[in-house]
Length: 127
Image (cartoon, rainbow, N blue to C red; front, side, top):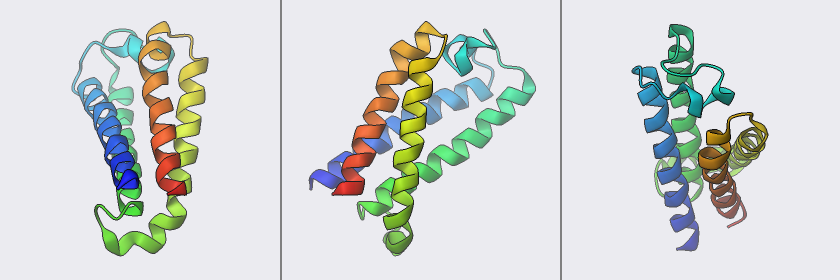
């Protein structure tokens, strides 16, 4: 039960990030809250396309975590048992990057989110 709660917590956090990325892709002027604030305001076209790629990756990572917890795609369990470590590593890298960024807003908003993603994915991996 705890593992499933952790997996759904991770899924919620991924959904928040996906919604943020989708908003950036659609032209929301929130560039200072991502990518170290390198593109303040509206993202240029190539970065908006990159957001779409990130959305696909984020959804895949979320599905891995949920599958590892037997919440969705239960046929993926053999794959998810190994791929969960990709989700953990992904969360480690995201946390480090969000702590190192020059953007104060990224450190304040996304470092805690990615840190929670790390804790929840690690809990699912070890559960």
